[in-house]
Image 1 (cartoon, helix red, strand yellow):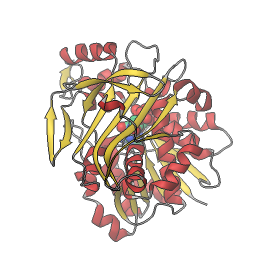
Image 2: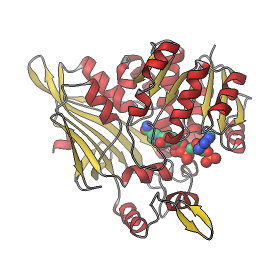
Image 3: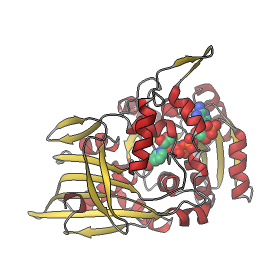
Image 4: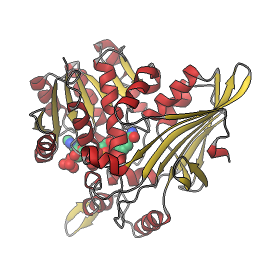
Length: 399
Ligand SMILES: NC(=O)c1ccc[n+]([C@@H]2O[C@H](COP(=O)([O-])OP(=O)(O)OC[C@H]3O[C@@H](n4cnc5c(N)ncnc54)[C@H](OP(=O)(O)O)[C@@H]3O)[C@@H](O)[C@H]2O)c1
């Protein structure tokens, strides 16, 4: 018997709630809380069966979250609100001695910069309180770290080259929309690129490095080197890595619209005065773009996300590619969502299950690759994100 509190009723939150509700043997009591209770109620109603309790909460306010936790008494809090709320939610969990899990690392509102330092700073206090925080348990970060840990455990003595490849070959039919929170998404992709090589971080201009990569069942798609947060923890946890990079696909139309928006100043996070009121252009842009949770209907095509790794096993060169393809339309049929929300929400549910069933345990603040990957990999197959692997074949990123 376990109680879980989900914070954030967006695209990802809806999937987490749906998936937790479908596993009553683990998640006996579920509460979904968000900035707007009406959104939680709508999700709870769609799931039905009186499985989900709902509440309103401002996750920026530690006292409010503490009061909510004290009322519901969860065993674990799943944070699928925005990265801005990571620190307040971690603080509230610390004060109430409740385990914590999220899918994206903290970002300050006024600087488009994400890194683990702020959350890793909670390590000692979480250890002292005897509770556990699992960081970055979506797909990437999340499954990308579990895949890497699985590769390290079963296939390599030393991993040398890691490429995380993320393709969305889907078409939602909208002129322009982002697949997860528009503000967070646009902040991420307009930043400079960065990758790790021989102990150093090499910075690139945004979208400067790109190449065609062949994705299983999809074909070749132009893929752009970006900085992504799991590179920070993976290069620390696997010090034999000589190089680690992250690639994501973008279509020409998406990039074109994004360029125009950037050039006219709509992606800026610097507040401006508009008719006597201070507004942030990117937040205004978010308000006029479709919400990620509404993109599912009619979305066609697949995502394909995986890790391509080169290294050594028993003194010989080895290559390994592990990936999942996820079909937008199938996801919509199952739970009314689109594949990007689904590929994030399912791993968050599985991570919660790992903690609540004691498969992942310990205290402190940990990234997903620090746990045993095997039980998580098994559940991916069971709960909708089956994976495939290729051993000792040419890697698509290098062709
Ligand atoms: N690791 C991965 O693979 C991965 C992939 C995609 C997304 N993510 C992460 O998943 C998270 C959710 O993404 P999403 O696509 O579901 O975004 P979304 O649709 O915009 O949902 C975010 C939800 O958080 C709520 N929220 C925002 N501020 C809040 C506050 N102060 N208090 C309480 N609730 C608040 C929003 O409320 P309103 O509805 O009232 O605005 C909304 O319901 C993001 O952090 C994103 O970075 C991770």
